[in-house]
Amino acid sequence: MHRKSTAEQLRHDLRDLVDAVVPDVESAVHTVAEKAPPLIQQGRAAAAEKGAQAATSLAGRIPDQVRDRLPDPVADRLPTPRRRRGRTLLLLGALGLLAAGAAAVVRRREAVAPQRIEPDPEEPSRT
Image (tube, rainbow, N blue to C red):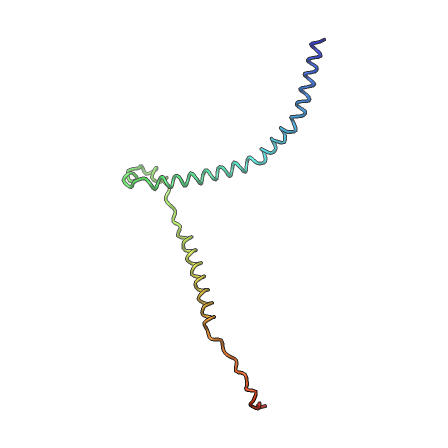
């Protein structure tokens, strides 16, 4: 009987342990299930961006003599540096509009405002 009572006691202790631990484990599993996919996607996007930057940087350092000797399938996959012409044109356009607005404000301030001519109070009115 001594053995059975110890086994029974262990069974009760294990049930109590499972009952105490299961809600915490379930909560942790739900938290991971909710937060993991967005974090994985953000990590993949960041890794792809960093990889593209590294590949562009490394491709820019390949000498032209080596680049000319690369097979066509490899040379076609080399990243080319992006030209930021669109962003530059947008910036120049915004600066042009700002300069035109500033010039209009300066012209208005420098323009002589028409002065109002008030009748002389000593002259009789002609009505």
